[in-house]
Length: 370
Ligand code: HEC
Image (tube, rainbow, N blue to C red; front, side):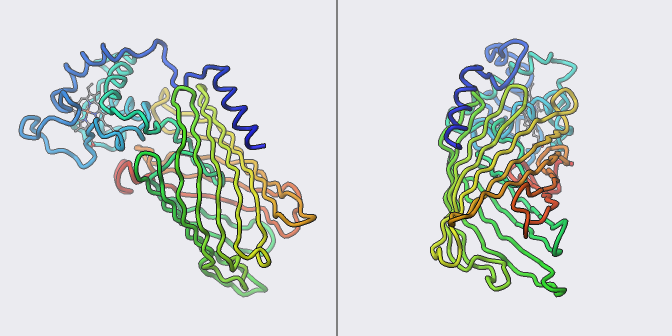
């Protein structure tokens, strides 16, 4: 099913010849170079690394860009840069020294200068930030990220209880990301509350393919879930488990997107914990205020299927509608909330309210950018 999904998406994107970034006319980096040399060079330097401070006359903020550093520039989508160029640094909580060009340059001229600035990063293997789709509550995305997420699921029915996952993700190299997930659970078990750490996951995700032109990105994940949770309380499986999955995301020119994730959990001792397979999809649409430059609202629906590989077991299906919104002006702090409802096999599976707060720390401190 998943392979078919991927094949379908590749097909759909080639058939549509999806040009993920939409322009009234294709941007012209040659014209962009002239604009850069006239209006940006004095501060950003002819080589894009920044004019020496002795000449530019201002002290560089920590976040001052070196446009030749692909690790710093590729995660930024064009819309983020355009917002800063149109409205000035302060519109995303950056330094006021970065002036607003919205009155001086036309929208096309700004697209041209962005196209030119993109050329300073010479390694084209870095996945572009446009493919960093809004994070769903459950489906894991393909884009390698620098972020911290605190995600909580609260039972809305049945025995009161909640689980909070503290997730740390960090990129390394061009394609890779490590991931640590520490779950903390609290539950009312026969009118007494018990709490504790669950099974901790440590894993590596690697991006294998990405294309801004077709809007597609594919990653594989491999990790170990350690039996750190108390099994008798139901907080852990009691056995080391290998987790593996593939994630494929497709962005369409209308800012509609689909994220697929399919994988398996393979415990060492299958006598105490079953092998499971999962198939997850998130379908969503992003809407940005202020002509595509401002606050981003991303409604999504997730379809979640889990199955224990045990004779006679059926697939559990859940549906999870949700809304993600950027809350800081820099858009590096985001919130998401939704309701996860079991569609079948509902015995012992409670409806849950799920929400997270996400901090993309590659984009600045938590206190910056408001
Ligand atoms: C007066 C100096 C100055 C001029 C002129 C200037 N910039 Fe900047 N620019 C800055 C500074 C300073 C920052 C860093 C802001 C920060 O990180 O707080 C910046 C940041 C940026 C960023 C990074 C935003 C991000 O998301 O990290 C972009 C893109 C940018 N400038 C593009 C341009 C372009 C294009 C021009 C010309 C049209 C231009 N700048 C002209 C000073 C300038």
